[in-house]
Image 1 (cartoon, rainbow, N blue to C red):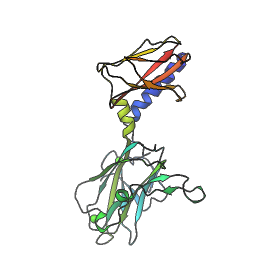
Image 2: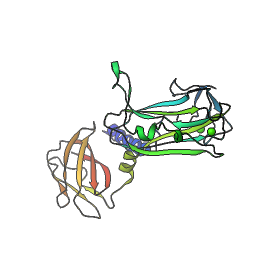
Image 3: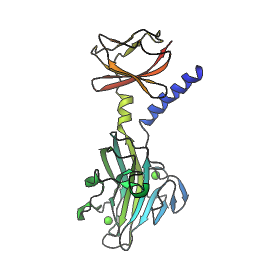
Image 4: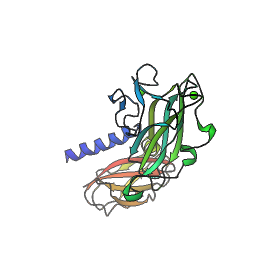
Amino acid sequence: MKKLYTFLSAVAITAAVNAQTNIVVNGDMEEWTDANTLANFSTFTSNITQEATIKHGGEYSVKQAAPTSGNFPVQNDVTGIIPGHSYTISYWYLDNTTGARSRTWAGWIDSDGGNNGAPLQLDDNADVLRVNTPDSYSTDNAEWQQFTITLTAPAAADGFRFQVRTYRDVDNSGFIYYDDFSMIDNSVTSLVTEEIAGLKLFPNPLAAGSSLNITSNNGTDKSVAIYDVLGKQVFAGTTNRGTVNTTDLKAGIYIVKITEGNKTATRKLIVQ
Ligand SMILES: [Ca+2]
Ligand SMILES: [Ca+2]
């Protein structure tokens, strides 16, 4: 039993950490296989070099040369996207030259939605992620600039193709620098941080066959969902004068998710 408690604490800690976690692997561009290969980025990423002087954060950024025609991409395929979750997508770039320019060319992915199970780039949010107009390119600026946008993952998405592209500008004599690709799941953040004031859940441990009390400073009825340790929902309902009917719960350990207005909290419950 002690082991299971430890496991549950680990789950709670992981959830708290996830609230801050950048889900782009090596998004800070610190890890390199060699001076021209960025770890965990797509092999489509081309014509880059590790840059240690001109950077936004950490030790390194990516320096990408402008092509004579077409574009060179920097691409990271992000997995584990959850449909309906809100994501804040951000990266930093430096275009300080007339010899190169840049733009975002990203999209939500359905990893087996294409022909013969190939990844399919979805049309959702293409109007902001892949804007093909003359003014969608970066303009010269001596300072690092941030691209940032918050979007809801569409129903078919299970991934995100995080891609930027470097093009020639007036000519192709220059470079664009990129750093700190980031995607944060805001839906995870809100679950963890929006605590319900004065929340109490008792008795805990709860005797099997009895009802559970859930109260707070606010005193209004709350939505309650209860999950077993495998994540399966075993109860959904609403408190009635601070009580939920949990008489069907068998002995075991559960996670209780309580929602009051726009606030949500989770608690561990033991049924004996
Ligand atoms: Ca960096
Ligand atoms: Ca430029």
